[in-house]
Image (cartoon, rainbow, N blue to C red):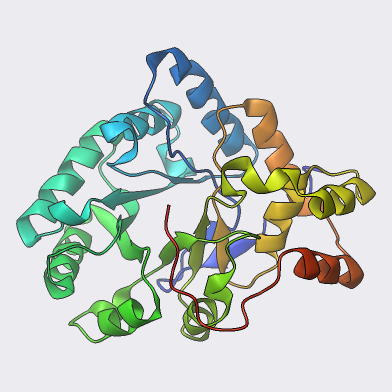
Amino acid sequence: MQDDPIPTVELPNGVEVPALGQGTWAMGEDADHASAEIESLRAGIDLGMTLIDTAEMYGDGGAEEIVGQAIRGRRDEVFIVSKVYPWNASLKGTIEACEHSLERLGTDRIDLYLLHWRGNYPLAETVAAFEMLKASGKIGAWGVSNFDTDDMEELLGVPDGANVATNQVLYNLSRRGVEYDLLPWCQSRGIPVMAYSPIEQGHILHDAELIRIAKAYQATPAQLALAFLLERDGVIVIPKTSNAERVRENRDCISLEITDEDWQALDAAFPPPASKRRLEML
C-alpha cells in the first residue's frame, strides 16, 4: 500500500508539502527514548512523510534536538516546521528564539516558523520579526498556531499579515469545531490548516463505530481517523509516534478508499458542528 503517493498541499508561497507529516510533541523528554524517536522520524522520512513539526516548547528544546539528529545528512529531504513561544514573540525575542531553534536543529534554516499561540506582544511586532527572518533566509515562510477566525482576520489587517502560510490547530474526529467557520475561512483564502493531535492522543481509538468501520477496510481506527482529515482540502496532518512500525501504519492510511455511506456513519458518530464553537486547544 505504501506505493500510493502521499497527496500534497501547496503553501501560499508555491511550495508543495506532503499532506501527511510527522509530529514531535513529547519527544526529547527522556534520553532512554531518544533512539526510538530518531528511528521513527527517519522511518517516516523514508516513507515520504518528510514534513516534520516541532517547537521550542517540546521537551524544552529537546524535540528539536531529536529532529536535528534524525535529519543529519538528510536536511534537503525534509521540510521543518517549528514554533516560537508567545512570550518570546517580541521583535528581538522572536529572532533570538529562532537562532536557538536553528542551533538545536543543526540547520541554517527553518522552512516554516509559527507563533505557537497568541500572547501579549502585538501581532504586528511578531510579523515584523518573521519578515526579517524570512528576508535573511533563516526561515522560508511563517504562520500561526491556535488562531481562531477572529484572530486570523486581525492578523490579515496588520502589515505583511497576509503573508501567513498556515494555521495549525487542534482538529480531529472528536474536535470538529473548526469546520463551522475557521476551516472554510482558511480554505477560501488558500491558507492551509495543519491538524495537530489528529487521533486525540489515542482517546478516540476506542470508539465502537470507528472500530467497526475500520475493520471493514482491514484498517486500524487510527488509520481511519487520519484518512478522515486527509479527505479535507488544504489540510496537513501531523500524527506523532515514536514507534517505527506505527509510522508505517500511519503511512498506509493514504490507501484507504472510504465509501460515502461510511463517511456518513462517521458523521453520525462524530457530528460536525451546527454552530460556532470556540477554538479548542491542548
